[in-house]
Length: 88
Image (cartoon, rainbow, N blue to C red; front, side, top):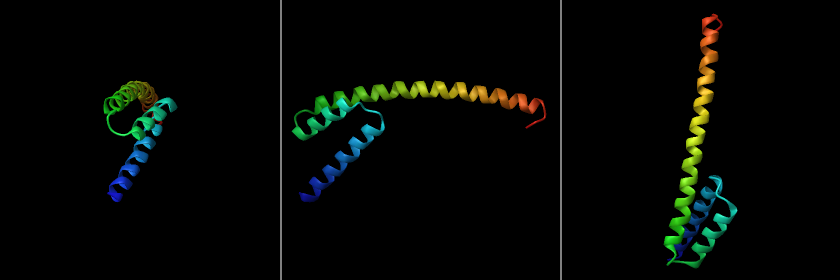
């Protein structure tokens, strides 16, 4: 049982670290931590918080992919121009 509790704590710390790393707002981190501390019975609330953050991350990822494509296309244009001039 002791190792199980230790493992649960480690997982909780890891999960909160990932939430922070992914840009989760402080309010979400606090609410999630409070739900975890409260114990079982609030899994639906935890799920709702995590799914909302997941949707936010998906939107950010889509935006980053679009930004990367613009940069890629611009770089490709410069590369083509340099190749055409024999500089690359």
